[in-house]
Image 1 (tube, helix red, strand yellow):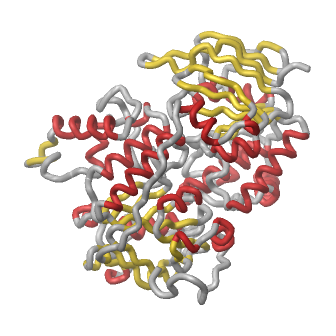
Image 2 (image 1 turned 30 degrees about the vertical axis):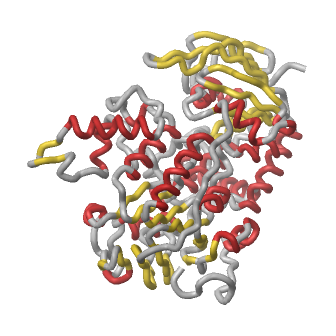
Length: 508
């Protein structure tokens, strides 16, 4: 039987790099096939070629045994190829239903489409409101829109890039059941994930890429996470060593923080209590869209509606202070959105330094010290092993994982007293993820107080001293990491915690 998709000697060159160098790939009907590789290995470029978003310089693409030239995504969709991108292609000012309708015939009935969206989302455990505007969605909720849009097309080939980052552990298995069912019905699936345990549990075949080339093909069910890691990065990721220690002074206190919705589809924050001390990492778990966005905005200073005393930063009431004034008092912040908020795509990495470094060493007498920002950008690139041509490379030219390393590194090198980090390793390969986590732990050991909001439970269990869960705008009691289990936290993510149970019932 012919392969569903065959690639032969696919090559794509850019001025500074060969993104794909003679790639061969075969995907059979009904096969769940993983593409594994470091950030910058060429995975995204290859997927864009399959989807028609990028034209290869050389090579052949065969679809169901017939050579095709996929000129654009519309042609890919006609063939039966659907893709969920790592960086989303949604219009902020349109609703969920309107965004999905853009890829459908012009006479599509929006009311009927909304019903289909709702049915499909519920079927796969992906809560969505079709009439909600995209600009009100969190990153995780935007990913749900992309997944549902792809599933609505009933594709012959479904390309998924990091699809489980928005799901509870209980919902991941439900999605896997759905993907296995799609595969059993003949749908081929290209699955990109940095979660090696997922690849081993789900995928039938794995193609490993490094520096734009295929370095191996294997049956992931016969491999260990360590052996897959060695194939991908040439080594096992270093273990994180978090030395137990007594936390120090209280750096951040949130007391009875309640905020109404900032927009009709937002999440109301209800009586949030949180205490963060020097030399500790508190991990915040939760399914995307349960108030993380609102809590981060209130803590960072983007939302200044809180009562002054509701947020104390190093003993000072800052509830009404903006982000810049909180930064000057020792707060660091890494947003979940890399492009647009964490970095300006069209500015250089050096210029992006100024988004968080605006002290006298960078700006003097109203004049930008370009030598200083270039030097610091180069230091971040070197220390965090960012794959970039240099400080003058634009932020938008970096892969998602390398841009994340740069943004985290930029904040770490400010030496903050309190650091709030959202999704520190989303879409980052195992080697880079281990490096980022090690840097956060080192910052904690140096006395910083860290609040890490993540939908990666393994990550939170690895680096946190205490865990809390946010669900429907409420915050659970905190629990020491050693007393928590994945199943317990998974249940708490549905709001099912016992207020009289373990952990602190007052301040988290």
